[in-house]
Image (cartoon, rainbow, N blue to C red; front, side, top):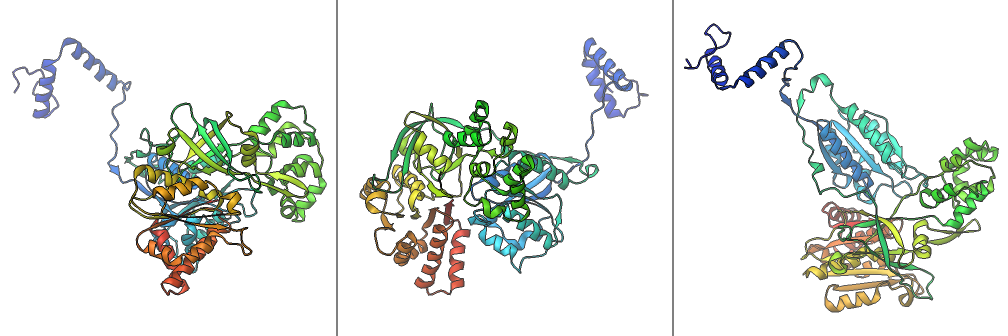
Length: 583
């Protein structure tokens, strides 16, 4: 017994507890004893809550997040899902469609799919293989899988969100249970996607009474690991047309300076440039809709709203707001899609005159999105600058001259000394390999931009690996972008080989895929020895033609069947040795 015993032996405590209390109380001051007495009285009166005794911790629920991304938006949303899922007691796992083994899908009890649609209803390039397997006859049954699909797309294209829609239907066809309805997001997807993520995680969550105490730690929010989504202001320090005066093209080399350090970009990353609409076109739209004096609306249309995209959705909104019978007829007879082809908002409001309010005109538009351009420089060589390579897009349809919103903004209205807003867009799937690894770069036209950054970077770090560039354009004398730089790179060894294809200099057009075929034995030899291959540029034709040429090269050089040659290229893709940054 304690020499300072305060509690009698008849106290309702065990001997050990009574001794412990005696030790605490005998050493306590009068103030401490008074506080303790008051605290215990408060507990008895119900005024002080007792500490909650949690149920034993239970394992976090698994959640698989599958994404198919081309520009990075689907991948970013997948990371957002994972971040919120961790906070909600899930154990998320993110899988790139490029890495998906379709046979493993039945093992996923909860599946979130975020899929972008590329071009005219196609899956992103990196997702092509797994997407085809999922849609094929050998795809496994998914009776034990609950799923939810978020589709990304662009209403300017006919097959809006086509890939996401197809995946959603296919998962249900294979026996999966749809946990929440699919949503189809346009370019302004942030708000609807955030709401969908919240509702989806709530739908996937187990019943609250069975959760117990789930321990989850969100490691994704560590300081310094997230890229800011806020744009920054850059000054145009150099604005040079790299084509000759006799060229029918205009390709602008744009150097950007910053008030402080440049964004922390790496070779292979892009910058999103926030463009402005042509004020002349804005004024034409305002005049046609009876709003020429609305300066507030004019300012918004120049800097914030997309006034060039015309979609079936736009026609539906126009018909609803104006009651225009002819537009309604186009919609009802299924002619709207063919009518809008090659047309813009100005064509709609001039062809079907109607007076609109500022709210109605705004409702016909969507937010003006930034345009992403591959960075054409390495910070190791240019310091606190960033360089872009932008080709002015000009064409004519339905008797009216047209221009690319961002490219003509850069070419016509951005001058040296002007300011513009940009935002970094990382691309971890288009990174340089180990400096000792050989690289093959295929980039016609402005697709050469990231390869200028690659060569600058490897020169600066003294890379020992060889480098081979395939470049193409129209005319050697007028369109050889960065010609002197490539010649210097060959001299100093930072570029090992270069093959050129100028399509208008010969009777028969020659493109980079033709040069690839001509050099097929050397190309296959480089790849057999561990080289990595990079393709940047046009997705609709060039990238597909290059891939077809590479398959043909494998078949010819190694005497493979077409299926075996296809498999050889697929293995390059799955092994992260065939990289594409296409648009």
